[in-house]
Length: 257
Image (cartoon, rainbow, N blue to C red; front, side, top):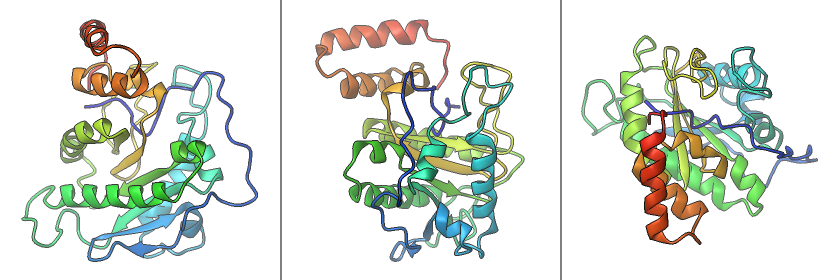
């Protein structure tokens, strides 16, 4: 299991972007990704009813607004569960991807639980990269979030989703991204309160956003992830010293990834 990817430690002294008169410069039309299986909707489009054929998109959006953007008594710190969701919504940078296919039954990818899911993750990444390419301000790039909603996965067992996220995370972190899993029965504990379950959502989903400097606590348990983090955020530190830091931090860290 991994620590939250769509959630992040509360950024110290970071001020959320002021409300903008218009959403950030991202084309928000619902599109089928060519021959792919996914359709992408902005939060605004879901609100307008463009995703009415996918009621789970509205369900997830409602959950994000009700749960992620607010404080929780069991969180273990002040502030909202996810400090980035509300700014992302405000800037028009919060998107939901859905599929018309029965997950995973992407044609030509086999059968059985999870068949076709890696192809959907690849398509999710392509959507994210396309949206990211349309953003010029670093603050907007940090707030861009895309959720892959997977309502046909088993809602009583998160094993398939956990395995999918775990297998994708190495490549995502190496390329400067975070990918996290949310599920109705996800047992991943909170970072500040081990009894809290911040990754429980009404519908199984994956969330992708940019890797941020504040994500360090979520990467401590894996030396490869930590090495990628230090190479990205501490490039001035000599490689030998970074290796020593990786060894020391992972040896002491109680966080599992």
